[in-house]
Image (cartoon, one colour):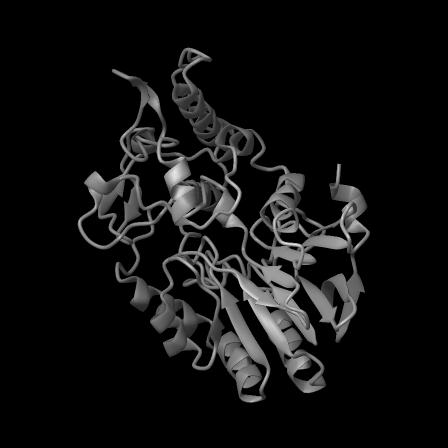
Length: 393
């Protein structure tokens, strides 16, 4: 059987700010080519399909998530029609939730793409098991990251309805897009320095690491014109109602050491979050906070969560990072492969050389062959597997 895995398409509600506009015709041609060739058994959309996060903080959108996602589908109706044609022709179309569409419900997606298969386990997450021997596991990869994993234990005091799961990464994205639309303004905000915590107090050490991440975001990575106390981040989804400032998010000095309004208990519930999110092998919070942009860390997750625990898994596919990546693991009875299939956004800031990347997996009763490919148009794709030598350190 042959599976094609694509992820991080990031279709948006407004072409003026969406990440996937120029690449949309290329995506439609690619889908149509797969349909006409009749050589592909299934196409897997591995998360971040319809994007609810990539919006400026000041953007005031429809508060009903179901309506919001249907508006995204309407803005990208040509892509929806291309996927619908695939389903009609008997190719299995599979969706796995990502972090940017973690609030997309089963019912809403069915109303947009009738006949689509959905791989879900808990709200905001899913795994898809496939292959001729069931040896392939596909998931978006945000399950193991505190900034992006569904979190239903923080911010309960702010919630007016529903079962909220938005993690801190949602606000990271809203501030980031605000910085983009403002042209990365040259402003110099100084977040107050906090004293180093007692190393014996593990909880305060974690909160200090969280503070350092946000300090870098506000001061260096995503500068915005708005002041630290300006309530410019408009939120009306997933139980959050109102307008928030960076001060509500960035930790500062408090009576108990380090504190902030939103995610004030960051780190305290991490073990509970992981249990709720069905993480087989708990992930260290300090390690992942210190290695947020390390691509090899995701390969380590694949090994610890799958290869070390289940000998029947030979291939693990993650999305999420936008960086195409390939790594083989030795020391097992069979060769084990981890791959990240990259992204389809127009301008890939995380890896400028690569966008419109996908994984092609061919599986039979004896072996599994994995190719990491870049769609370059004119019915052509280039093999980029040597990218592993560039990123594996």
